[in-house]
Length: 120
Length: 106
Image 1 (cartoon, rainbow over the protein chains, first blue to last red):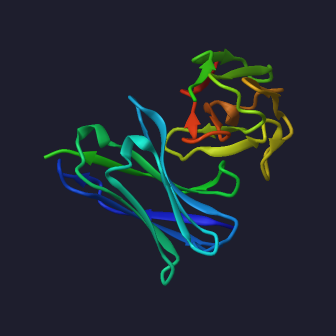
Image 2: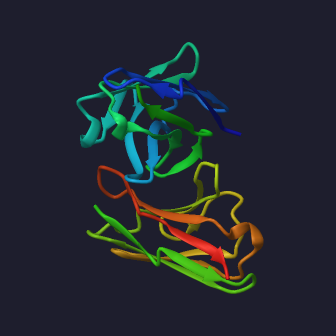
């Protein structure tokens, strides 16, 4: 059974970098059939897919245009987890952030969610 | 691709049928998923491929449609089904979600 466990700070100051971790159990971040995603949810934006990393003989990334200049999603094979880094945050980045697995671009396993507030 | 769900809120009595709609602004074939979200929880995958139930999803949940028009039907609402439901297209990048339909107790 796949489980995703999120960790990271719930408060980030404007202009700083939001960093979250998603630890995977029951699957591998290096799986050749899965991809590892970050999605956020806010009242103003709804559910918004942000980006993903996946391994198909080499590592790939896909990012949403809305955050492409600010986002990095990268794997950690030694710890079987992956990360979200979103730089230069503003209050508009306040949201619940989820990590999620996809096998065919729909999300079959989700982390528990992390409320991140951007405020000084 | 913009996903539009209707209605925004659906009031249904337990045991009744609920019919939720999702419309895509462009053709998405059958690359459509449905999710259920309860307060304080992450979304849960119900349906993918427009009509295939995910593992462990009860048969009272069914999905239909293709192209741009999709429907999620809950045949006989149970107490645990009162929640918010989202559709998501995965035919084109970026992956996009609808705004949700809240199913509430009438």
